[in-house]
Length: 139
Image (tube, rainbow, N blue to C red; front, top):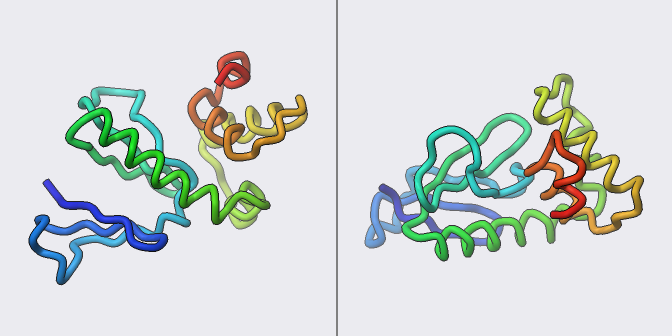
């Protein structure tokens, strides 16, 4: 169990609420492209993931309401800073994408070509429904 704090564009992990002097981990939120509810495998209530091209980090909030607040706060930071050219910047140095990442990119491209013009929502829909364009459209 850890105490998490968002400061600027970073997520800090501490051993406890009373121990703010030295974080156990620091996550640069701009190196991730989405925070989302964990939907695969065995997962606990309140579990969500921070997803980047290289890694996925899992967190568990004490309640669904807290989880939704964490996801919203993190995604607001990620998308506010990264909106313009976000996909291009994130993928410009990638040599190899996983099949899930490739599928998500294809779904994202299809949504944009169909005229959906909100990059942030298209990205979230493509990440959540990387193989299902119909579900992504209805996101």
